[in-house]
Image 1: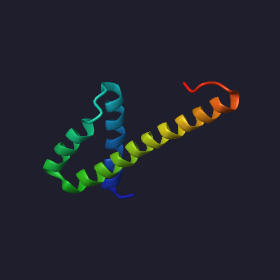
Image 2: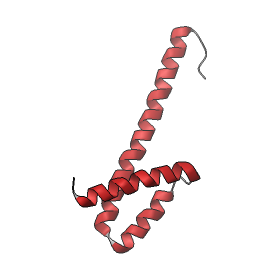
Image 3: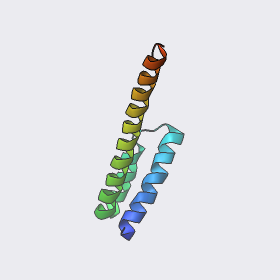
Length: 80
């Protein structure tokens, strides 16, 4: 992993935590704009890291819902 990728990864982790704490789900776009003003390379690496993390959150939520539905069916309960 290059130093740019390491920086982007750490910044993406920090941004995801800040988004969770503040409830601002588009905060990452503001951070990207700040990065883009000084380093397009870091901005691109950061956005890649953010996309990966956001995709993981979406996929995990989907998987949890599927498992909950399956378990509810197995026990004869209504979903929810």
